[in-house]
Image (cartoon, rainbow, N blue to C red; front, side):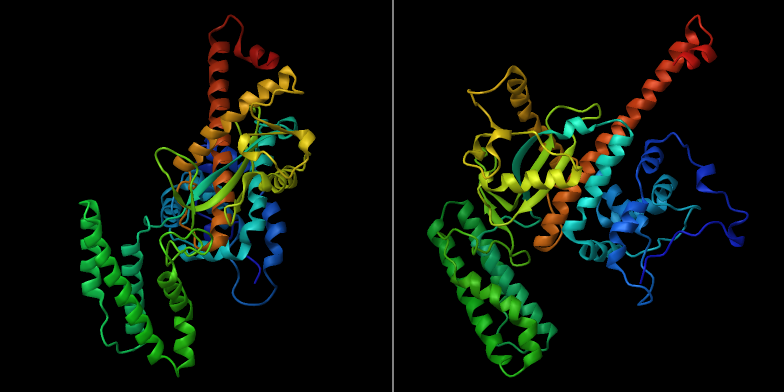
Amino acid sequence: MLPKRTSPQDDLELFRSRLENVIDQRRPLVRLARLIDWPVFDERFGTLYVEGAGRPGLPTRLMVALHLLKHMDALSDEAVCARYLDSPYVQAFCGETYFQHALPLDRSSMTRWRQRVGAARMEVLLAETLAAAERAEAVGDRHYRRVSIDTTVQPKAVAHPTDSKLLQRGIETLARMARRHGITLRQSYRRVARHAQREAARLHHGGKRREAEARVRKLRTWLGRLARDIARKIDGDAAAKAAFAETLGLVNRLLRQKRSERGADKLYSLHAPEVECIGKGKAKTRFEFGVKVSVATTNAAAPGGQFILGMQSLRGNPYDGHTLAGQIAQAERITGVAIDRAYVDRGYRGHDADRPRVFISRRKRGITPTIRRELRRRAAIEPVIGHMKTDGHLGRNFLRGADGDAINAILAGVGHNLRLLRRWLIALICALFTWLRAAATSSRPVFSALQIG
């Protein structure tokens, strides 16, 4: 059913104070709420609901605002819901007229809303943050014409994969599912598997590789026995077969794989089989486990900072040069402005985009002093990626599945733009008070100074 609309004042609210009369209208969060065009989300997400079927959906502004706040301050779903109950400014940002003493949603409603909207429609949020920045004059169309593009890794919230960990987790998962479905096992191996995994880790750390490998072989044998025992006992039960199909498939895939294998079929996590192993040549972290992400930012720093123009997850760890055309197309789709120049590093050699408007680092021929200066500015995208990882959710993705990777990547860019816009609004307020203080202490009256300003 269509989402509920926030209702105006009724008779029951006659003696309550409105939030707009209680809060400070100069606070950055209040000013930010006035810059965002909230009806745009009702128009773009309205097709996801039908009229007259089921219970009314939650207000679109409430769900969008909670996700904006979550990624602006790197909060979890639980934390942003708790902040909603604590802060009148958060409730005003979410569109409430009066202070609410009860949460109007469950935390799981945010998960279901993300799944309903999907990654493709999440680009609307990124486009609206840029539109709000334009209204605040923190960025302009001219900044969209020259962009910097790079790739990074969005790590998944998984433990570092080792053979002993994966095998022991498989035993734990199968034994727990068998108990839940009432299947009597010959032996669950849970206790001995836990001990063998700890022993394998201790022996590996102590340099006793041969003894550690013996424990790993035991774990592999126990997992195979457990999988075959369950497969025999669910042979005639169609419902149990359907319940165990995905887990048994992952376990059999884990038992078949070798340590020396490489490629997309390698399994690094049972609860997140989409995780890939990516090596970016970092001295601190040789390998990262997640998904590759492409990032497009403004090349020249706008008055409000270096804004994100596009972000997308790249399944299969593709070559950087084969992702450039898609990233340029996404940035043009979000901003509505054609890109004149795109600046990339040497990892994009042999790219698939229009060559006249792509400039690679260390290029010597056919560049002007302006292009040379903008090529040096390309390196500024690296601290932007670092801020999204430390200040946002790009450094550890907790959303499930490949769709969760794509959604988290876009929302990480949304959070970065909102942090820049909030800082820009704070700077404007500080500049206004500084100017008023200077006008008050000058020889001119404040009124005449305001008229001149």
